[in-house]
Image 1 (cartoon, one colour):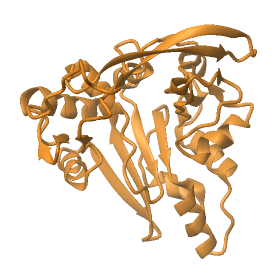
Image 2: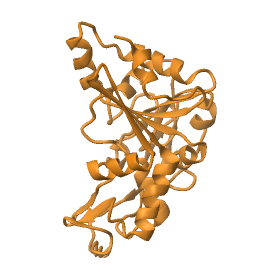
Image 3: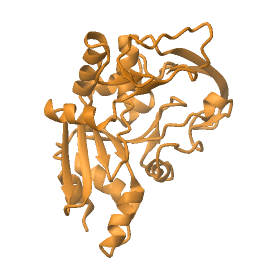
Length: 272
């Protein structure tokens, strides 16, 4: 069992900016099945070796507690999207970016730049999602993920100004790296909770389309443990084109019907 050999299957070049999406439960089961104990710290170290000194590793630490009026602590608010972010939070070599809803723990060449980045809108043109697009970053999928956590798609929705989402402001207590508290306001591109809009970015059909376009590639370690790579700039462009030129028929649906035209959002009565 070798973390480095597993990551080599992704074919990520040294110097890359890598946004990691992982399912550690399936990885731990795989390691145990093969007589070894999985260690998340060893995986993080292997990710660092994979991209090299000129690369950047980003571990997701998204949390939506701030939306509920719960104070955000850069040092203490736990990731809601996987335990690898919780592991990174306990290490000195990873630092957290500043947005209370969409943050990452970052190691590598772009750590200072990304962690000093200031943006109010989680998916705006000044967000870190925009930076990932500009940098030509890749999303690295580790383990048997039930669905691809493809958050970049919401950035594409924001750029396309889809009619079923709009910006919502959230204000609350914000504690920085030094635990200094200020009251701050951030925003997220939300959809109404009372209409049956469903994104299909993670559907097998959409992921197969990304493979056909060469935007997604997949590997398999020891014929059992999956690993995948999605080129984020090209994926955002693919989804944006579908939303603006194809009515979103490949990437979203309303009440079971593919496409945007049927969304019929009445924002005067919407619950969001």
